[in-house]
Amino acid sequence: MSNTNLRILVAGGGIAGNAVALQLLRAGIATTVVERAETPRPGGQAVDLRSASKEVAERMGLMEGIRKYQLREEGMKLVDRQGRDIYGMSADMFEGKGPIAEIEITRGDLNQVLLTELATVAGNLDYRYGEWIEELKQDESGVEVTFASGTTERFDLVIGADGVHSATRRMAFGPEEDFGTYLGGYMSFFTIDTPASVKPHWMTLHSVPSASVGIRPDGDPATSKAIITLRAEKDPALRRDVAAQKKLIADMLSEAGWLAPEVLAAMEDTPDFYFDELERVDMPSLSAGRVTLLGDSGFCGSPMTGMGTAMAIVGAYILAGEIASTPEDLTAALARYEAAVTPFLDKAKELPGGGLKMMLPTSKLGLKMVMQVGKLMTTRPFRPIMMKMLDSTEDYVLPTY
Image 1: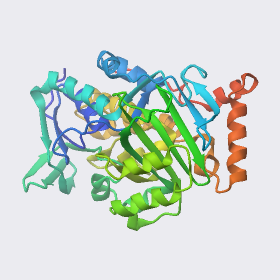
Image 2: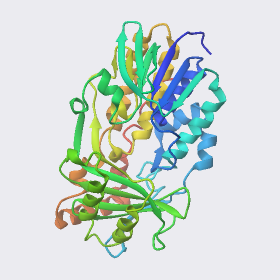
Image 3: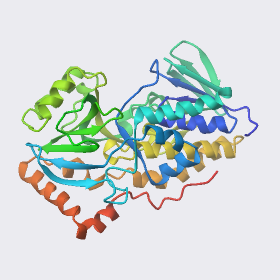
Image 4: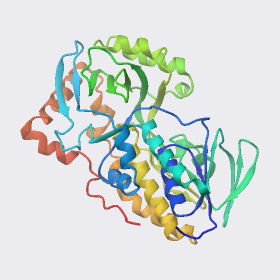
């Protein structure tokens, strides 16, 4: 524990925000977290822990809680429009470095593990649901923050961990379009009743030109997560128009076959429909004075990387560690944070297989070729090549605090 009068504000009560808050509190630093939602958000798609992020979870003492919620996923397979197997990859085929990692857990459950740990060190924690930042005014010694509730308070540092469409980033750094790169499509996730025909404990995918539909195991065997990926031109009008989002999905999967009709029917009444563009966020710097960014706010690689949670938790561990090392010199701490995390981010943000152009060709011929290449890579002679392509962050050396 350190003796410090620092007051730090974290914007966003997701995995990144809660992880950094936990480590700051453990270092004796008074921390306030504001989360726009009224309550913790349950469920969500499966996320994984591997390489450096697994090591962080172990160092933070989270593994006991994670094991309680860990999903049973045995592998991933691709099927044709009749549901017949094209090829599959068991979870252990690539030593836990493939699409299905050793540790898979829903986003909501991982967040609950963090919230449970936060409750044990809540002495210096001020957690506010239904609250968010409206205005930031900073000087050399701190930041004056005006909240949606109308109150104004002063903090030594503000950490923006409020997602890919971060309001904190916009206020401190500039508009989203200055830092975001559209990656050519959209993704959607939502809960459905588990279809009787899917193989238990396996993630199953079916692709058509420019689109794919998948079904992934959930924490409750009675439900699954539908995963939709679309290759399409960017349409800003889709941002807040749920009806238009669902129509785009329905139009692009109308002739898909397999379980697409069942998924589309369930989409209309699902309680947790999520849809967003695939975007990469690249910042020239993660800090601007007394405001710094964490997680998707500062370094989103898009869900296609499969590394969003890893980047969030590794970044949180490093940021808190550097702040606690020199609480009297935040400028130096933020510079060290960026220098230490950037090598990990550069590799974690790489898109496997070349992105949507390779994953979702626009023609049947192109799709057939991609399937053949994928099938070939799962054969024993080509697995070493595949291994070299997977988990490029394996050699990253995590700092110790």
